[in-house]
Length: 26
Image 1 (cartoon, rainbow, N blue to C red):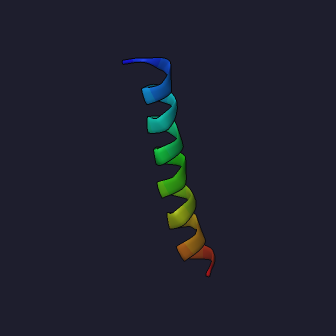
Image 2: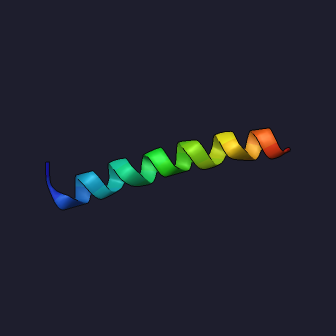
């Protein structure tokens, strides 16, 4: 796995968690 793909995977995870947290707070 290259650095770009790993960063993209981490970004995707953070985006999913952020979306879930947004649902909870709304």
